[in-house]
Length: 261
Ligand code: IPE
Ligand code: IPE
Ligand code: MG
Figure 1: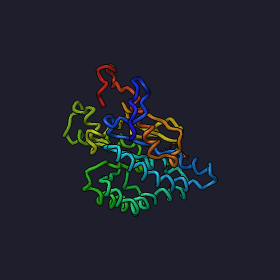
Figure 2: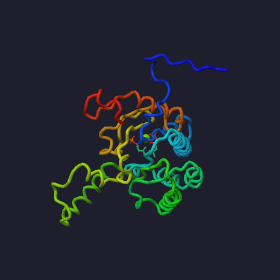
Figure 3: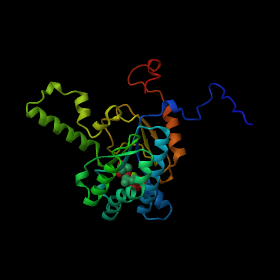
């Protein structure tokens, strides 16, 4: 028979507090190319391995009770890459969903996609659409892929929608407020979870690279040295422990906000 030792007070938190899991976790999955290069492999091997890691992290986040997991898979700037790399990246959603939809359904995960989907190759669009439809009845974690997404482009599109409503006389300029702008963005369907609680970026880079610019006004930022293909459930937990060590204040005072998520 084993007895659990009681943890002394003031000890650094080593275990995740399951009552303070962030609702919306956003991840910039970076470092696939460098991971491959360090192993003398072509960059696409890093993307292939990265796709397997998406499965692991999706399962781990869903098991932890995350409500929305947003993964930056392809930016509006990634078209600048060599054609063969772009074309491999465009095939990944198909490969991913072909093998993983049954498991997503078993885990009650709903797939969503955010970005300029209509600019993707037709077969990529078809794979994405099928996965969204096949998981639409699920009620668990939302797995939200940012695919051909860019934060500035998203804001431009939102502003155009609002300007059109003003020009049509449906809205007065003084009606425009933060709520209206949030609703004009691609995260609006996430409702109360539209803004990430935490951004995780792998591979040691510490920048946003045009990800969720409006939505991350008060997100906690966690930068990990691991390349994306090296991530696993434990590394995700490490990132969430760092998040849980932070005191979110939202401009207020820490003592009033300690329970605020
Ligand atoms: C992230 O890994 C995947 C995408 C951007 C599609 P990278 O391909 O950016 O890998 P590095 O940053 O070059 O190592
Ligand atoms: C951001 O990574 C985009 C994705 C992870 C999809 P990048 O590798 O494209 O970003 P930069 O170029 O290093 O800023
Ligand atoms: Mg990169």
